[in-house]
Amino acid sequence: MNQDLSIIQLVLNASWVVQLVMLLLVAVSITSWAAIFRKLFALQRVKSLNEDFEREFWSGTSLNDLFSAAAQNAKISGPMERIFASGMREYQKLRERRIADAGTLLDGARRAMRASYQRELDAVETNLSFLASVGSVSPYVGLFGTVWGIMHAFIGLGALQQVTLATVAPGIAEALVATAIGLFAAIPAVVAFNRFARDIDRVAIKLETFIEEFSNILQRNLGAQSASGH
Image (tube, rainbow, N blue to C red; front, side, top):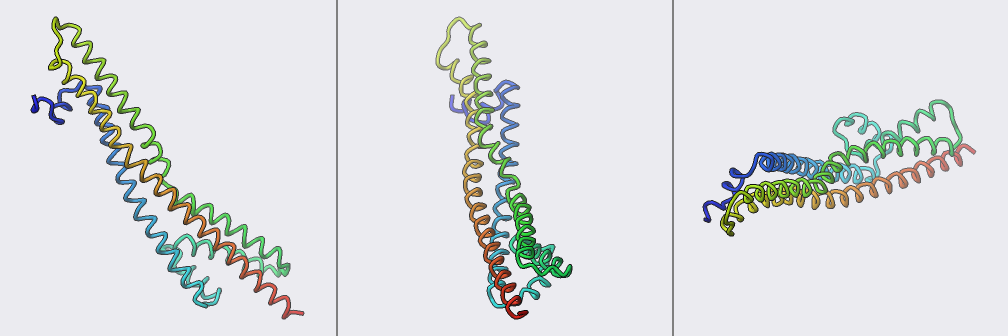
């Protein structure tokens, strides 16, 4: 009896529809775990790069030197450095056009940083929607396999004269494996989605704070240049 009700036997003895559902859920689970590890390493890299640039930014290095370094490191730089570079690039372009109005210069830099911020956030949020879909849909796919398996089991039992627990149990157990696999796929995806959403919110707040702080620095520089000009 124990051998008959082992997980492998239950999967092998299940109907082809239930087996197809199990195979789909296992494939989704593997893809989900791959996405979780990719996102975990990507977020750790983003946080590390942001912290490195923030440390450099507040170390007293001039804005022009930081901008030159950001241009050279464009392919390996983090989101914060790219946002800074886009703001400085727009700021310098406007200065080259002989635009002297401080409000116009500041607005241009802020708009460029906001656009870059949105692109960076979209990149950081990649695969989150997939994890959300896995977490919400997998239990229902598993439940479909269970319902189909139980229905198939009862149809088979209908032809028997005498039904005992020994004849009912294998069919129902086979069907319930599909729900178990569905939950196995869904639970890690939901936990990872919540964790990553929280981490991404922190990254977003940090980037928004940097945009405001950098804007204030530009504003002070413009004010100082205006005062020295007079």
